[in-house]
Image (cartoon, rainbow, N blue to C red):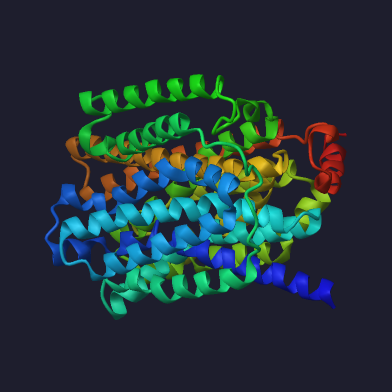
Length: 488
């Protein structure tokens, strides 16, 4: 009875963690639908409006690594609760904001809370589920929240903005945050951090957090400031110098924030590279396809959200069991390769969509391929990133993979937006109609996104492997066997 009760509690805890993460993921896209309303209501200019998004991304990207390591040191439950508290309070401030400054400041605090929650949630799940089959299923559910949450945010943002006003895209977080906090107190074990007793590497924390924040700031502001402007080049240069200082510190301190030996774990390194490329492709899907539907096909925000529904349903089907079965049957490599190549094909179809496209012929096929690809690939990418890591470094590994996805998404969106804008501008100068020029710019962005996804699939499918069992945890034996079988 106790075993059955503990099993039930573990799965309830998983759903609770996913509810907390869903709030964070939603906020990366839910705001975009409401930006025109926010601009009108608070009097933002075009240039200042971007900081409603950027303020969140800068702090979110900057604090992921530190948040994960703090969880290892001081307890992941404590950090998760702290993150949920910050995020919920900041959501209330965003929802009640009546000035530009208050909204942007609250969004920055939201990003900090979101970074902490995202960094420790994955490691909490890995520690709750040690059996390969249960872990694969749990990661599938978590993967759906991460992959599907962005497109759900587009739908929810359209619904709330149309039915009420933009304030509700933030206020809807309040009851969820309170409920998650209260239930976490009951369901999550209050344990010491796996790296308890080690000292926090303060110098490493300051340098890497500053480096990441400067890099994210430079990337998200690159289109506006110019990619070869003095501001962008100086910021990226300072970020690079701080990163070198950080690596130097890590090679010398007794308890490093990021043990450099982690980079010698092949799966950790390869899955993070795969994550960067895939996130760049996924942002092409979420944002560029939404722009195509709104600006070229004249879809309403609600119609855009509904257009993502087929992909969400497919990803839900994978998260509820298909993904775990695929991983247990074939290992991690084949679904990564096949899934990401299917996603690349979906983006390729979007790159052929005409100005007078219709949903059945020109949107649905790409959405179906992207839904299948995302549902199939995310679970094994996350498993590969975490499986080689010892318990004391699980929070750090979680922070690393989340940082890879976040930086890849930010960089990918900036690059794709630049590519699309340059193509559109060039065609306008040559005399093409504005709608045709706009569509051609999106075509090029989709094509580049497809290259990102295909590259991620090839790199992950070829190079991800499970290291010798003596260097990994016993809980991975079944997946190790499947991966080794795949090589043969």
